[in-house]
Length: 328
Picture (tube, rainbow, N blue to C red):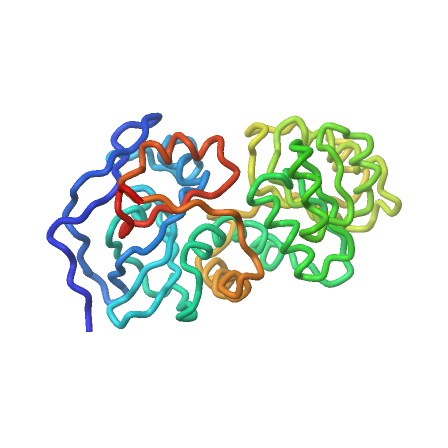
């Protein structure tokens, strides 16, 4: 049984880089491939990567206009099943009443799953989960440093590292109030990101760094840790995930020669499609069970212009729900 695409549907459209998108009427999508699956979109997260793609600044952006933003969400299939879906191509498309996805890039959810929580949480949790389960394997008893731990993705990274059995989870960030909340999520040590000497001393012998910061702070912390390693032959895997402090980090060559550092990236391209899909299926289990969750705020799709502006300042993750009335 196949769902019937709508003749017209409401969708968000980006028509100019740097400007908020608009709600428009578009033709409903069509199934054209054996692997295609038509879903009624129930919830889609307004993630930082979505805004970066729309602005043409993300490394996966094609800068093609116009397009429908949104890289993932929760939808209902023709049989009534709830599915988390992720769009792994260069474009988006989740912020619409309907979307066609590759069925192999979906995960069936339990009937009682909180669809808003799933739509809000899977993306910020995805980066740490794939970094710790695919790009490097964190075994129980290993030590992890999270740089940029006060953002939604960083907070998820702290929780996931603890969930996977890390012995120590060092959390570094700039927001003192949110930093103080991290021990409840599993952080064993919290350190201000700007206190490089204290951070380097505290994290001198970690096994893995999850880096959401990059830029000058990373260069300073990496240099400080390299100089303080108790055993320079003990491998340190530095996983670059985000770049909120800048796209470039000038790392002294001596830091890389003085100890055994593996510098790897985790993102599209460095991860294969099969690896991503398998990782998401794993991740969906604790997310659907409520073991991992970020604060979320539900808004109607028609509220896209205000939501787009608010997303830059809110710590909560905005989730757009096509079926929600504009006045809700």
